[in-house]
Image (cartoon, rainbow, N blue to C red; front, side):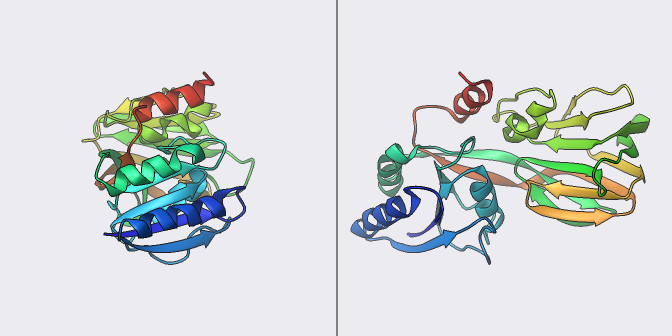
Length: 264
């Protein structure tokens, strides 16, 4: 078994914990790679059987996006403010990794979104895709089409398209619903709309089309992948790939996410 450990070198205690985990992995006779990353994230594709990430949500997302095989299982150790995708705290990290190494864990498969512009695939979204004006402070005008449902001439700062696991992110800050990640749904949430439109929730079997009329536009995926464009159609569909998280904790991901988001 080959494991890769990624850690944020500027997070207090992350380097020493990563070295401690390296020793545990070696004691179990497994191969490993160890990478220190900064704000720029992971450089190049990561190829491994399991990925262990020590960092905040941004580092976790960047590491997931860097996986050569997108459904490689990920064990996330929280070293940030949120830790919504994390399985364990730094104090729980040794136990979590030992549980992984002896096979005492479960896998959770989380829905992703595919984001395309005019038929060109841009990226998967683990959490969300945010479409806005590429000029800060400017509104955009667009139509939203979901099969025969057509919402026309919407004016807003933008739209956020979220997965259930991403519902505790930007979507929640905009007043969108918190959603159990075991459901498969596509959440569409307007950003500061002038037009009367509310957050909407759709089946993952549907294709959502945002017809971008008046921009210019920018799409930002998971805070990592950015593409600017003048206009056209943004298509949002359920991805054939899932995000696969290693879970060793007795606390469900839903419970962890909701409690952190609600501050309880």
